[in-house]
Length: 274
Ligand SMILES: [Zn+2]
Image (cartoon, rainbow, N blue to C red):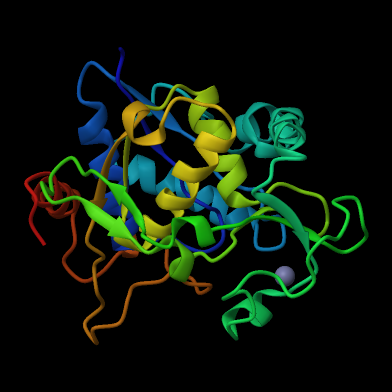
């Protein structure tokens, strides 16, 4: 099967060194023979800004990376590649899940869940999926033993406590649009993705997508896709790096950082290093 790796940024802030090393890692996973897909995850239109989109292309240029599939520039992205153009496929997937016993409608907010509201299921069970102001969720209490995810470089793999990490994750938002988990799962099948390098902060998402993949009747996620969950780079103060809303752009990744240093980080992750 041909290798298809993907670079899948969300244009919700200026990219940082961790994103740059992640781009490099996925290029290494594609290798010289494989396809490297650029897939920009822009469903979250509230946080989208054109300068963040431009930053993705600037970072690719700075790294010297040329994806073999996906948009060539922002205009091409808007014309042919934005996720909204795949809305029919996402909505088909949601319709396929309608009526599945694990899928339910829920009026709770994110903060309700953060407060532990769903520990024993939704307190307002049995709402119609077509009721107003409800999201669609997948019940995760059946997975309280966790989900096992094999890893390309870590022989132990990862066990993700999915019910604690992403309790009853959302597949359709209250405005009727698909969630990140739903769109990502559908897109990876549409584009035939075989390799994913992503940060360990996304382990709960991988676990959610593995569950969703099964519900959608796709081949098992971890059999279709080889995952490498890399450690997160920390800032000098030990805090996790985050996308900035400030004026930092790709070549401003940090003091003394050049392209070679970014690829060295990615190669370290390929070798299983911290
Ligand atoms: Zn609820």
